[in-house]
Length: 362
Image (cartoon, rainbow, N blue to C red; front, top):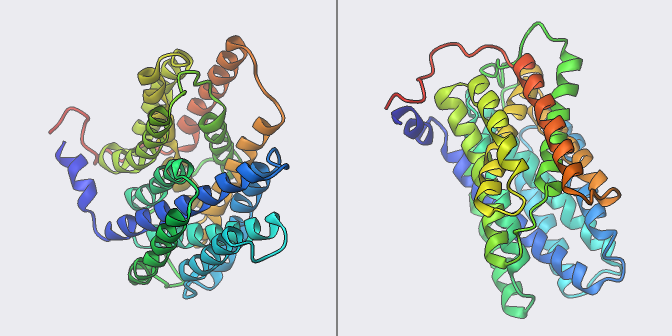
C-alpha cells in the first residue's frame, strides 16, 4: 500500500494533476458542443466519425511538430482554438457546422499533444504523470454530454476554458525542453523485438482498447447515472494503470489487468458492476502502451502519443460501419482480441526489474 500511495507524490507529479484539469475541461467543451451539433444536424450519423477523425489522427503530425519545437506552448494555442471553435458554433459565427467542428478538434489535438509532452518529459520514466493527465478526459466526456444546452452552460463552459490558461502556463514549467535524453527512463520494451514490429503490436493493443471502450455490450447502461459511472470507471482505470505500474511493475500489471478483465467483460452485459470492473482493468493498458512506444521513440514523445491516438481511431472506426448483434458474436470478438493482447504484451514488455514491491506488502 505504501508503494501505491507514494506514486501520488512522485517528483513532478503536479504536471499530471494540472493537465488532468486541462484535459477535463477540454473534453467538457468538446462533448458539450458535439452533443449540441448532434441534436441539431440532419447529418448526425456522420458527425461523430468526422469528430473522431480530426480529434485523433492529426495528433501524430502535431506531436512530430512539438518534438521538433518543444518550446512552443501548444497548450495555449489549443485553448485559443478550442474557445474559437466552441463560441463560433454556439453563436453561429462561421458558415457550416464542419468548419467549427474542425477548429474545435484541432484545439483538442494541440492540448492533448502538449499534455503528453509535458507529462512524459518531466516524469523520468514513470507512468503516473501521463496516466493521470489522460484519465481526466473520460470524466470530461460524460460531463459535457449531460450538460443541457442553454446560455448559462455556454457562459460557464467559456469561463472554464479561460480558466485553463493559468494551468497551461504553470504546467509549462515542468516541461524539459532539452534535445537529448528526453525520456531515457522509459525502458519498458523488450529489446529483442524489432522496433517497427513493436510499434505495430503496441498500436494494435491500443486499437483493441479503443474498440472495447465503445463496442463492448452494456445493455445495463440505460440512465444518466449509469453513463456517468461508465465513464468514471473508464477514467479511473486509465489513471490507475500508470499508478499501479509505477508501484508494482509494468509487466505484472499488464498481464494481470488484461487477463482478469476478460471474464468481467464477457459476463457484464446485463450486470453493471461486473462490466465496470472489466472496463477498469482493460483501461489500464492505456499508460502501458504509451510507455512502450515512448521506450522506442525516446526523443519523440509527442509522436509516440500521436501513434496511440491513431490506434484509438482505427479501433473505433469499424464501430460506425459494423454492428455485432448477438451476444455470441460479442463474446467471440472480446475473447479473441483480449487473449491476443495478453500474449502481445507478455512478449513486447521486458521483465520487471524486481525493485517493485509485491501486491500484498503494505
